[in-house]
Length: 247
Length: 290
Image 1 (tube, rainbow over the protein chains, first blue to last red):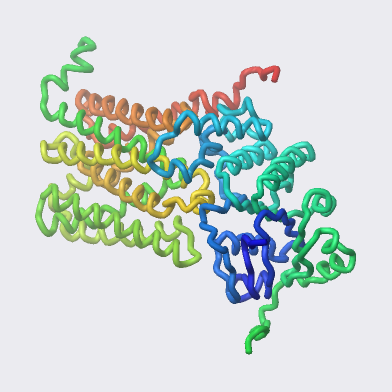
Image 2 (image 1 turned 180 degrees about the vertical axis):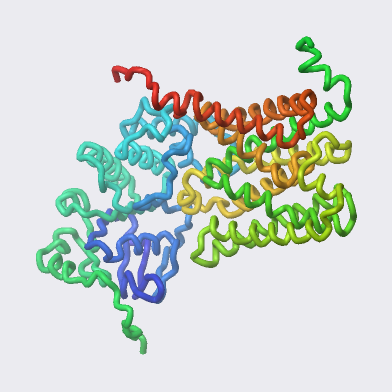
């Protein structure tokens, strides 16, 4: 099986302090992986590394021919100005950016696709509403509709269901399952372990260092979860230079 | 005095009033969208900073070439760009945010400008330029102002989509590989250009007034980017027209008259506009069923 991302002893971090330490492995193309770990364990950092928003401090991260435009990314705290005067349908239409760019026109087909995406996330009648009038859950649905249009082979979701009610979560999980069925590679940062066991075949459990990576039932075992909880949250200002893996 | 004599006659009778009105129309068309985008990007004070930053460039231009429209405009434009560029650079390569770096560089620029002005300050022509001479706009200045407005509208039409996305969701634009930084810089160049156009009419001190006051007022009347832009341009032009008439009939200096009318429109909008004004807040209409 081909890999969407291959990591060889990758370390990612800030100011030389590792947030993800010596991670080796690969995300198979078409896999649906939950990224699980305590707060501060490097989950978001790993997604940023995969997205190419930060370069590894050490090691090699291969994206195996994926271009930036092949990856859709839903950040945990999007820098979105929710008071901006823009409508729901216009927000969704941004998902066509690769097609329309700065200059090309929005055709009727593209508009129809945006309306269909809104229906798919259960917001069929919301097109003309300003985004400022939406609840957090409705807004998350809008962002999923936008990702539907982006039509990317790889989708990275950073805590997509945090502060979202169960009904919205269930609806959006169906969208994720549909993407999985279409053969896309999906990596999602999650906290709800029951949800992971139910909907995600693969899991990567990290606590700065990788704790387990593979089939969800194998990874989410008690001893792994216990080990993940032992991780020290703060970094050490007087930490020694790490020479692991250097001959 | 009948209405025709009060509202139209001055513009028919005097060429300088017609040129002033045409200059204001052009300024309003360029400043409306530029101001609206500054407000939406939460960069209202950056406009202010850039308008002060233009000062030393215009003053140096005057020292070199006297009252030359081209040299002074060019000097102002370069000074504005230098301040915008250095502020942006500091914000990108250090942890300092853009508001702080803009404040730092515009203050340096302003102090430099005041220094140059005060050492050459006895000159009446120079004071005219610094405090505005809309009624003395000649054909060359009018041509410059109109060219800048035309170029502004054209460039905004080209980069508009990117500018709005960069403003609304910069992370998304980065993620899809859109030209965020380029669009941002081109926009700052446009703002400086419009401030240079404005200082011929209103002076460097008040050029930013016709850009920010109408845009800030429009927020209480309109709720979409397109209508906000149109409303700001309309308010800017109405203020300019009223201000010119006031200055003609009551014999006030025209620059402050125009900006004060725009300020009056802003205050009325805050109090009584249909969207989010004090009126809507303290005298709410009864809630709906669903």
